[in-house]
Length: 202
Ligand SMILES: [Zn+2]
Image: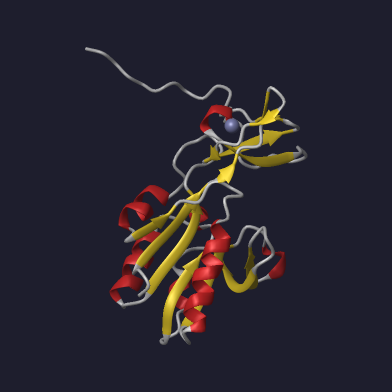
C-alpha cells in the first residue's frame, strides 16, 4: 500500500527525482492513474513538460505557476499526485495537499529541505511534518581534503558564484554571473556572513 503522504527530501544531486520516478512507475505498473506536477521555473516549454532525474529517467509533467492550479487539472480517477521541486511552491500547497488527502488521493513530493544558506526551504518544514513517510537520500561530498575526496554524506547545497561560495545576502537571481551548485557535507558547506545562532543567556 502506498503511504497517503510521502516526502522525499534532501540536497541537490541526492537522487530525489529518481525516487519520485520509481514511485510513479510502481503506481502506473499497478494500473493506477498518476498526475505529475512541477513549478514553472523555466516556461519556454509551456504547460506540457516533464521531470527528469540526473541518471536519465523522465516522466511527463504539468508545469504550473501556483499550487491551486493542481486542482484545476485534477482528474476524477487520479490515484497518486506526484510533485517535484515542491519547495518553490507558494504556501497554499499545504491546503491543496490536505484537500487531496481528504479526497483519498495519495500524494508524493520531492523537494530541497534546505536552501543554499542552509535554512529551511519554503513550506518544506510544514510539509515534512505532515508526512506519513519520509525518504532522505543524500549525495556524497566530493570536496578534496589532503588530496582525498571527503566522502561524507552531503545534506547541504553549496551555491557558487563565479567559483566562490555565495554570500548569505546574495540575491537568488543574479544576472550575468556564473552560478553553480554542489552537494556538500555540513563541514564543507560555506556561507559567508551567515548570522550566528541568536542565543541569549539570562
Ligand atoms: Zn565534506
